[in-house]
Image (cartoon, rainbow, N blue to C red):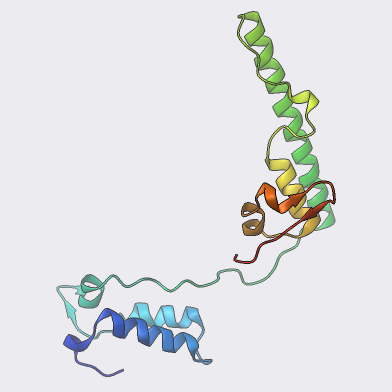
Length: 159
């Protein structure tokens, strides 16, 4: 791209980046590095890149995950144990809090001992472990996507 500095605008920059991303020879990270180093301009005014100050150039989003990582059996056991211990601690705190409330004639909070889970974290992590769902897929779930009777979860496309 050889253009006069005055002829460069945001549209030209975005078009260049799009073409670079489509070409097989460049990875997004190399384009981002090239973009940072050149700033698509050679001219600098008073120590700052003129293009950077003139246009709001968005950084290129790149995937920073280099490989998939799976929990070992020992890590999974430890995670499950930690979640159970956390649930028990929450139940004990609630019991102590309710005892304090009763002594002061205040309304007690619902008893967590009758519930299978004390809050949202343990079921969410267990579902992730047991199904292999990604974090974004779990966070996008709605109750309408869950069928408890048939033990099915519908995963919507769009993540």
